[in-house]
Image (cartoon, rainbow, N blue to C red; front, top):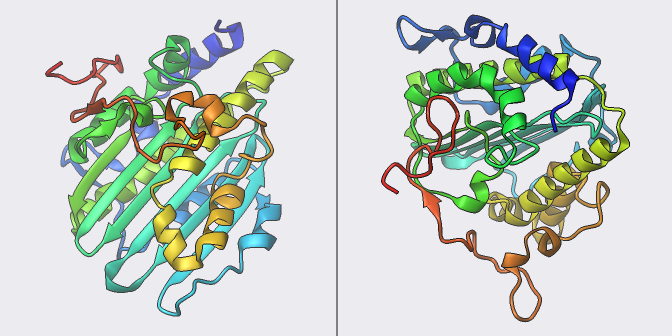
Length: 324
């Protein structure tokens, strides 16, 4: 049930203009106003840290001491792990990788405190040679197909922003039904060949989505109802449990750190909270993945359902595959 405070929140958000939430996007030319001079995802991270510091007091997280000095097994790869915390932000963390032959990886996220039902800011970028694979989203804490009030509260005022970038960064191909429940109607899921123009577009999208998330954070009202806080905590724990188990970047981390350290990075850094926000296991949340012997099925999808085209219309309503 939506509270009066969330109704006021939605009204305030709708009053924000598309220009305020999309300052990096030049509508007349379709080109972003800000350029990324070279492919370095650390430029993205620095912008995020600087911009976040304009909105709240950012301080190093205790995780920084544990993970900030980690080194890869080889001497050809540069790795940077950063972690911070702030009022309303349980964890802001970043993993960036620069390797040989054009390998670049960015895994950047901001997780809210359980007292807020804010979405989770998520940027997962992978570049190898001339291929770029991108996921950029404000991941919903609650399934937006099942929870319309949550979708309206956080995404109704952002649909124009998402539609602008959906034209420049088109849908990247089949996405499993299981993964889809953790994405919003404004998700950018795309693949493209490297070029200066496309890098500029991606950098602009990252900036605008981050500014949008920070705008939501500024408007966020601390929850005092214990039952809602418990629900928020479990929803975030469910998200973390899924990501920690099915993280597609794990194989890259295992090559760089070895199996033991890679698992530690995934569970205790990238998805910190999976062992502290709740006690449920992956199979508690997702029993359809249970094998006969009790282990987790390694398959990405058990539903056998995928979405080859954007499954939301321009209003953010779920429509599934257009050919269904």
